[in-house]
Image 1 (spheres, rainbow, N blue to C red):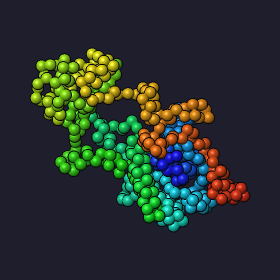
Image 2 (cartoon, one colour):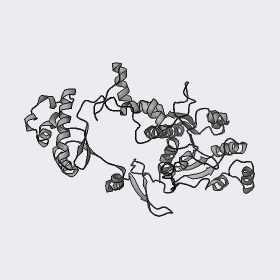
Image 3 (cartoon, rainbow, N blue to C red):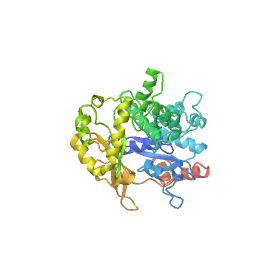
Image 4 (cartoon, one colour):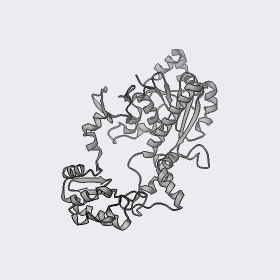
Length: 395
């Protein structure tokens, strides 16, 4: 039993922001029908592993457990079909450029008149209002215009794109939060509502503390080395003999012990390092010491030493080491599932619920795999389906 058993979702979205939100709802128990353009489908399908391997990491990751229906919403048959599906479903998700659904005659106002209980979630790049609202974008647009590329650069280097589609993911999480709140409101009032989230808005909210620094001071925060721009503690990534470690503490009350493990007992009582917040010169000196000492020992040696001293740290790991780590499976972050092609490992939703555990889907659907099945469930006859096909509503 999932928390969202008996709830149904129409997923019209593409790539990550909307599809991952729908996938999260699926893992919570909702049934998700994915609506895709005939002949092409979700744009995520066309980003393969390699030229000779058509499997798509984006599509596989964000669409497991859904059923795929092909439907061209630009056609009269496609429009009438989605209207009929809206009557019987709880949530509709899309991340088309603002104005697209309206141009197809499928605005929130129109669809909510058909189903007043509908929760209608729209994702965009810039938000639904303003001069940029109609611009197309993607994850990197959110990172760029939401300030993350600026914040990720180090020591005045050029702006840097984050290695993950992080503005898409934050947009997904904001969309899920809005949908769950809207469903709770609907449970109390019987009325649905519209939800809007955006990539840029999500990035700004994700950096609320850092941007508030600018609001308070009137200037941009500046990063030093691998530290944080507005948290002048140690925070340093250092290379050991066989890998990298990110240090999160060591100064303040821990400093005397940390000084010993750095082989600098002469600094154990140095007041500059007894504070959690370091001055720029003190931090630079300490970083130089750390950078000299840490390469002399292995990761496993440093793990034992840092654990004993109570110094917080994190190993800088690549994806191969993550998927080989049994603790990732123990916590459900990675899960082994049965797949028609054999046993597979999938990414689990990182939310644990004691009474209604989340269950990831195993199989991402083939394009249009469930079109007839879903339409029959919604009252269509085979004659109706043939007529829609002849009208070009789906392939």
